Length: 135
Length: 383
Image 1: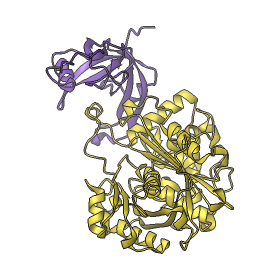
Image 2 (image 1 turned 120 degrees about the horizontal axis):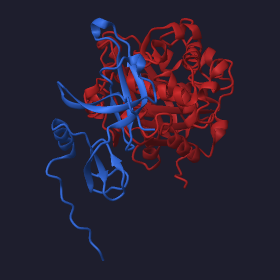
Image 3 (image 1 turned 90 degrees about the vertical axis):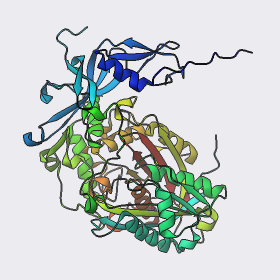
Image 4 (image 1 turned 90 degrees about the horizontal axis):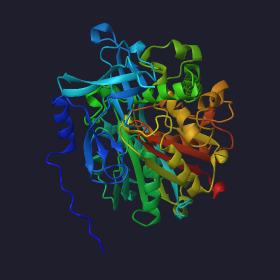
């Protein structure tokens, strides 16, 4: 009979860890040491295999716009507001936006690069068009 | 594997209240009026109800508030809340509870007054943690993202999406209970205000007040009730995620699984469905669900809905009450799919009656394409 070794709980939860990494200027993703799946949103257990061995690794920051939607608003209400889903090179998807890009220039398939933007709610990952996309 | 549930319970009463605008009424009051109507339809009293199934967005504990307000003492309570699909899911769990003897009279109910009370759709306070910082406007943003993906991947056009809205309106024009009954053309939809590109205001469901209630009993008892019973033939429920950013494939919903489970239980397939009630929160929903429920191949939903196929006189009657797009949408529409299917299968749908309808597929959508529930109903000739 074999028994699994007791899992060591992380010092802080993955939500807080993700945020601390962003506050330190690092965009990190979890990677499952058992099945190799990249994981986002940050989790305790790998949703692909159930493993608790999720390890933080630097994200490539490279991705493509998977889909986009544009809230139409009058300028006095803040103007048009585009929200995107970005597929990162690692294979995870996240909701984000391109703060410095006109909504009409955001097309599905657009190569993008991540950066960290500090806003009122805290640091978030946003994107810009990638001037040098990988093939 | 057979669950032994097919045909074991039936809808014996339906009722609505306050559909459209009901100023001066609370959600609980509207729900009580719908319950009264459904019980009257079934020839039953409040005291007969011993199983309660409900969900809403206005109460933290919808079942407890409903029990208190109506003075119920239910033997079985199910407050599963998976969004607007909850009530279609409840039809399956009510059948389970009835069949196993946990209750004898199941009440499924819902009421809301968002239009009169708030004048807007009120999204739940808790929203996906990793989406909220980007200020997404729910629920529209999620359906616009799915629509954009479907258009890019399959070439679905805004004209095809507009066909869904136009068909719903054509049915609504035959339904005195529908909220929007004015004429609507493809050009009208395309020219209407863009609210969340690529969705116009006419691609989005209404925001109305309204309440609905459904009463179910075991099949043997249902035969002695005043109205023709509408039998529960099959049901299925499925979800993979809550947030739109976590949906595995934006162009395929969990309806693939909920539908397959419902067909398997009923021993039927899409070709045997006479009338469909598909939760049309947005025009893309109908296209996705027609694909996912097997009425056309994946990616061909846009072409499938063209030329009025879903409209009165078309080959496949869909959302015969006018749907959430033109009849009623108080925030959670699912219960109304069961009510309209029942009216069609009883042959009491008036000018919008689908002649000889003996089977109906009801499909509920919850959250932002998050939860899917399918129920197949039929007349006694289908047992």
